[in-house]
Amino acid sequence: MRLAILMLTCAFALTLSTAIFKLFAIQDEFWATMAWTSVGQMVLGYLLISRVSVRCQLGAKLHHDTGTVLAVNAANEAITLGGSLAQHYAPPVQGVWNEREQPTNRATSSSTSDRRMRV
Image 1: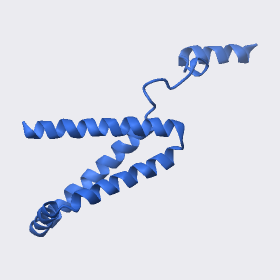
Image 2: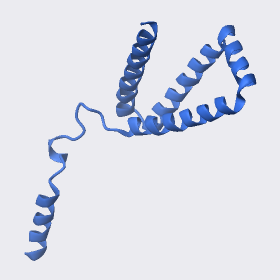
Image 3: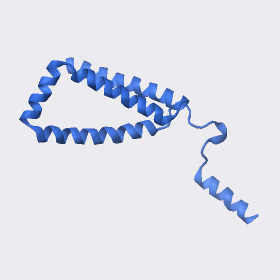
Image 4: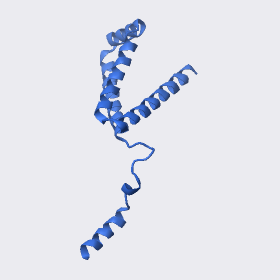
């Protein structure tokens, strides 16, 4: 039960973080918002590793099985980076295009351009 609560809390925190990111990325520049998101993640990582019990557990695990820890970490970072970039580049759900900029059907647009060329 405790694990489920922790997982739901993490999912909620990620959802809230993504919503805040999208809000600022729409209003401001994307890369500046991405940089501040990275700074926030580094501060959170520092706060987590500053706990002595966590640091001792990490040191013991690294000493016992360094290769496995580093391999899992590298795979996790690659997956996280890919997912994070895909998530941050995804358009907001609320409304991507205004009424004039809505995409048209390719079949309709190509036939329209063909008609223009024939005239």
